[in-house]
Figure 1 (cartoon, rainbow, N blue to C red):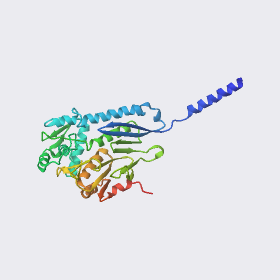
Figure 2 (cartoon, helix red, strand yellow):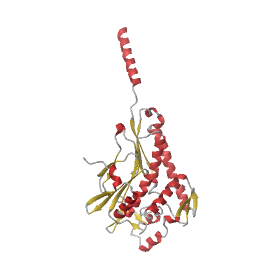
Figure 3 (cartoon, rainbow, N blue to C red):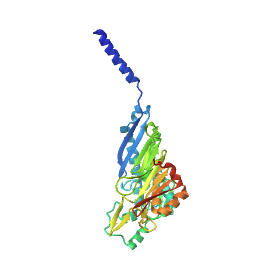
Length: 343
């Protein structure tokens, strides 16, 4: 009886010894939340050594990520009356703002110049006029006179950065960074994760992405370009590790009036929704902020001018145009290396 008890205790002790000596395994974790009027999702890999670090577990890490995203909203949201951007829009001339807001506006102005005005963060009054902003949708297409009048209220040439100040030369100028701020938010979270020592992650805010490293077992992050139209069909698969990606398209956000479809993307040069065959633009860059802004600019420029613009920049860009019932894809030479080869 004593001998059996000793053997049983010995087995328990051995099991405990084996258990205590077993090493933690790397883990793939995921955080989900909402921000900027859309969703966010962060997938990240912890090494065996990092698994025991409590501050890197999902609950603790999400609290820090939410803080980062709240800060971006407090800086750049037009839906928050006391955000830096809202206060600037209410001002008549200038406002001191954070380095982050200066960075985003400076990049917006750079893309504005590169694209000959196709990307314009002051286009908000026209967006509202056509019913795609927070204002109520119109019950008829705006008159040419009203469009022309509203066009006189916009123009990034009236916006500038002077040190840590945003400055406008038109008192009523209204700036909306929604076409580039999500990308900045992705970059901010990616930088934060890297600062925590996390080197393998995928950050997604409303479809704007940043991918670094790999998933578990060195499996690459795979990104899908959606085929425009109904359903969730995949046009192409990409491997974009250590890069950011943004997609712009007019196939989801639009309205129809008298049988005519009006896109949510406004061409500042005409004051009207874009009207061409380009329906989706995907841009790859080291910065999601840059990719976000360029995707919008190329969408406005259209299939021919957009491809020429991307080619001139030597930017990895993938375009989908609709011709009849078919979707036609074109892309710059720099994009090809990211495509997953079809088997």
